[in-house]
Image (cartoon, rainbow, N blue to C red; front, side, top):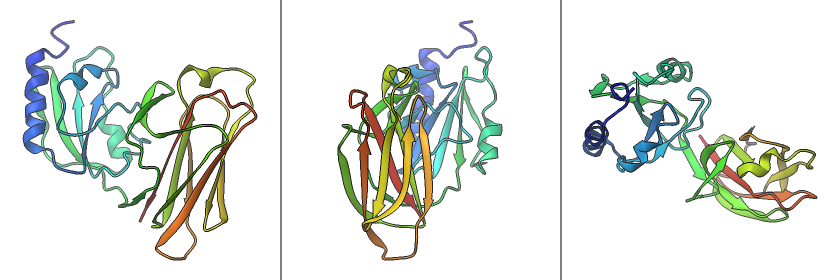
Length: 227
């Protein structure tokens, strides 16, 4: 087993390569997602531990560095999932002992506005999510570039998501006073809503209102627009 897992030297060399090559707008995806030891070494770009690489949002990321353990037991090759979302390898894979490092161009839509501007992470369905924690019954107003699509994500933080028989947490989304959509969260998972925005001014006001009869569960959300 030790021969299949990275040594401290492997991690340090991979982290050094990232420091010399990473640029603003990059992020690092560790694979498998349980390889959290990377957080002790990688400091050149945000570190992500998504479990579904084909469906992950990667908000604002244009180039994704895949830092993987190809010889780890039962590790699936993640490259197929990246190709399925339209990503292409930007250069050849580098090897650092038991680690592999390769940059991928995501060809993602351009970020228009980060509406929730979260600078903290919360665990939702066992994955660290960059999201804004809000109390049930509260609302958040934001102004930003509309772009073409509004993307909204929400989830219950921690183990309370698995409580049985609880009423849903409902988020109503408005822009300029007009309703855009409703998202109900009634259990574990990172719930998604994507809405095509109607034509209008480039800069718009958005409002997210959170409600539920059960106010005890911790809750967070994330919203952004793309062009």
